[in-house]
Image (cartoon, rainbow, N blue to C red):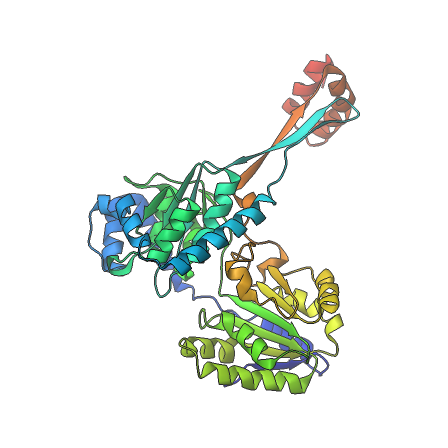
Length: 435
């Protein structure tokens, strides 16, 4: 089985490309039914339900007090991390903090020509819940990507939920939580963790916003609790789109494509190329690379089942195709003038990596930008996680008597048009006029 091959110049391309875009790589509908029951159960039984699910899914027996990871446990686990990895996490955290601090919005306050004062104030949510995967793989980088922006935003209470299969704490995750500044860590996972963060239990106080990646059950639970709490986004399978010219080393491009394919069989890797011979060499390089990978079975399933190679007449004009795919990660493996020019034409991408020496993986760890990004074409309408996700904007309005005189008549006209008598009365009574 080989990845899909498409040629933008061939008859039927539009039909085949549309079918490619319409593929569903998410889990089946049964997940929603299971998650609905779990969320309802946690709301009804609280800690007791969490203990039951922890015993069932994580094979870990404890009492309610044991669900919270103590400071001593955190420190003991973190102490096991080798110094090289410790230094790398600190290095990454500093870069992430610096980038996100630059994204902090500024309050606005001004008086317009009518004398009306207008403004906006940004204030953080009181409490944020961060979900961290802890099943088949542990991702300390995700801890930093979620908690550091929340800290920069000024969130006072940050609660981390992470499953601990067989009761084992991951040292890297515990260290990352300490570096980033998690206030509480709970050893719970899956949909039950999301429900506990959203609604609270006897032991866990609820939060105001939940962020962080997870499996299909976590994503379905976040979708279900939205409205009770805020969420960052619904993360689907990871994806990468590489636009590469024929001057690249095919082995580099193959490695880039597999960097996301190794996440999950449902992940997607796409190559856009102009040169057919180059694309063929890359495809062979991918197969060669797969033979050396520890996660070869996962990556091969992803590449062969969901991957695609798209030939285009010219890379300079491929932005419309890139935009329609609206990928989580877009690499422009080209000389910088050409890469920069193409990037200016791209409107829909979670993150763009420019130039031959900027592999997507650098953004996953130490670039400073956030790796929590929109998937499943959601880049058409949303962006990656940042400080703004932990802030609320409150508008300010203040009218002087003269300003109300200037604004009031138009407001009265609109209130009358909408048939909202009390709206108009609240204005006219101050103007000593009949609504």
